[in-house]
View 1 (cartoon, rainbow, N blue to C red):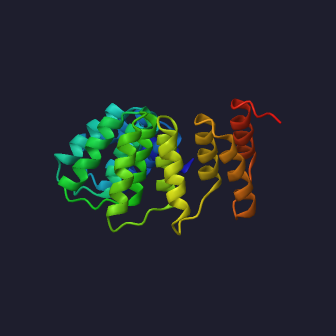
View 2 (cartoon, rainbow, N blue to C red; view 1 turned 90 degrees about the vertical axis):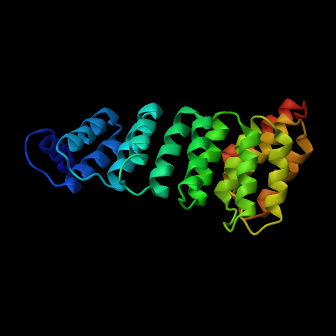
View 3 (cartoon, helix red, strand yellow; view 1 turned 30 degrees about the horizontal axis):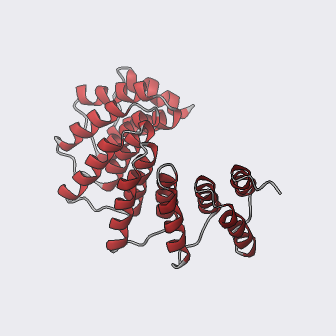
Length: 244
């Protein structure tokens, strides 16, 4: 209710500080009200209030969360041509907006632009870009991004492996299993998602023996065999006619 009051006040003629507008836009972001977020953002511009990186990021995320990636990119373009210093948070918000709509080419362009703008890239940015590739069935680009993380000073973590494996699962099951095998030789721990994706890859490759072995291995590991893992293994056996 407090945020609703701020939004009402912001849309009226009551003079509010920029921080109040930013809070209201953030509330719109979490409430899925992207149109109202843009309305508040435009009002800030008309009132010549100071726009900071938090305001831009919240407005971009509000559009992205509602799959309005074109509006998100328009805001990001305005940010690039403004006086506000670009940061990783705003870039992640813009890439995430593309992810929601599967606009992986635009996401990769934004990702490449980070380096050109000398914005520090982190695992969150990489993961967002890889997830966008997954939704766009661009597994080769996902693998390339994963290799870039491996060659950098950043550590490959579970989220990067899971995102890349999921991207490959739709287009190249062998690469998904190769990534899983590589992960097993690192200090990165598997999760239930990792296990599920690996078993799905076994199903697509008709290698049911591998799927059964994975379930057995997971039971002996710290990963608790969830319903998703069990269902994936059963589907792999069923697809290969190994119902017994």
